[in-house]
Image 1 (cartoon, helix red, strand yellow):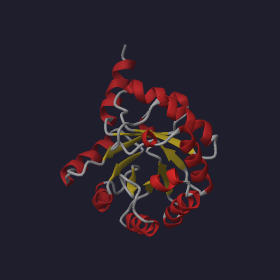
Image 2 (tube, one colour):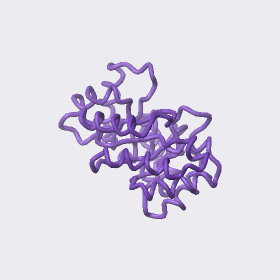
Image 3 (tube, one colour):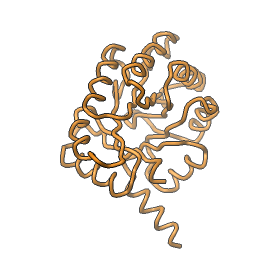
Image 4 (cartoon, one colour):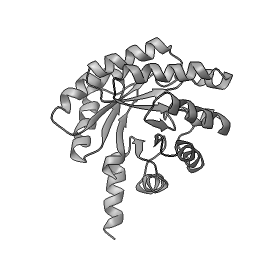
Length: 218
C-alpha cells in the first residue's frame, strides 16, 4: 500500500512547517512521493535529500488553463528545483471544444520539458463526459504521458469507481492510472488498487496506513 501513495498537500495556505511534516511522514511511512505546489519543491528536495521519496509537483494547477509555454516553463523550473514527477492539468476547455491537437500539444510540451521524468495528466473527470474522458485518455497516450489521473481535488468531486474503471479500460496497459480526490480510508485505497490503479493521490496517507494496520490486526 505504502508505495502506491503520493502523500499530498496542495492547499494554498500550506506553510513550510506543514511541508516539513509532510516530508517526515513520507519518509517514516515509505510513501512513493510527496505531492506539493511548485513553490515548495526546492524546500522539499532539501528535506528529502538522501531518501527514496520522490518529489511530485503540479503544473497548470488547478484549472489547466495556463498556456502551453507557461506549463513547459513551470515544468523545467520544477525539475531544476528537484521535482522528479510532474502532475499536469490538461486544457479542459480545449478538450470540450474539440481542439484535440491543442490538447495533445499542451501535454507533449510538458512531456518534452520533463526530460524523461514521469508525467501524469490530470483530467478533472467531474467536468467531463464519458466520451471526453475516452478522448483525453487517447490524447494523453499519443502525447507520451505515463499516467492518467482522475482529479485535482479542487473541483466538484474526485475519484469514483465508474470513472476509474473507464480510465483503466482506456489505459489498457499503455499508460498507468492514478486515482485522486476523496480517497480517505484504507477501504477506498484498497478498492482502487484492487481495480488496477497504480498510484493514489491523497492527503490522508497516514490515516490509510493506520486503517490498514488496524484491519490486519483483527
